[in-house]
Amino acid sequence: MKLKKTNTEIINEIKEKGFCILENCFNQDDLKKMRDSLLDALNYIQPNGETDLQKKYYQVRNFDRKLKGNWYDIAGRDINLLQKLHSPSLVSIVKQYFNSKVIYSGRPCIGVYDDENIHLLEPHQETSQLSVDSLLFWAPLYDTNKNNGGLAVYENSHKHGYFDHTLDHPDGNKGWTKQYTHVSKEISSKFKRKELEVNAGSAVLMISSCLHCGYPNKTKDSVRITVCERFNPLQKIPFLRDPKAPLKIPFTGIDYNKITD
Image (cartoon, rainbow, N blue to C red; front, side, top):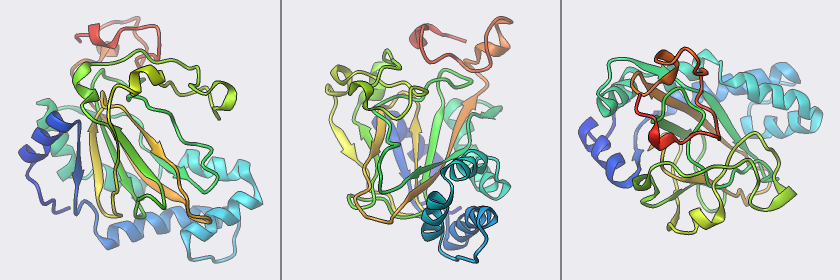
């Protein structure tokens, strides 16, 4: 990983904008290793020797959606992906940002958004983590843009602390899940929405208080796949201070802004 910006430049940009795009985060060999690892798992579900990850995704989706979902669930445990997510260079940025010698893995996973666009999340902040504040790492394995979809951020939203979140979907019963919380449209409409275009090999590092969501994939038979992690500093982890505290801070029913440790 040979980033164009120094740790200090990255940290200052996150503090000012809420996020920073890390160019040259992964090289072509890194991308191939991660894509091939995900492809091998899909070919294990339905063996046929397909060599294109995007084509294979749709083959498995059409073959068995439950097994496709199982692939998604287990992908965050893939060592080939974890090695890239936990690179020394990236961890050093996080440690410097939080001025912490101890950093915890919050929730390594992949994001998968195909041409059905049914799994897009509404504007939200990264809650239900080990610590109050964390850094979200988001890296696409294919280019993200207005055709393939991508990540949208709400400018300056990180400067206002944590907003109230709800399990109620802004569009009523149209939401695909009630497992993830969102903010109301009244809150998100206060900020300018910016749809980021991030190429494969680059990544986004974002403070957890920055409002964000996905924007749709408009290309048939294309699938946007990202690798993600939430880095949590030792500081502000209630689980290690309060014997009654759960491992992860709850989605709702708690004021994040009042948690000091």
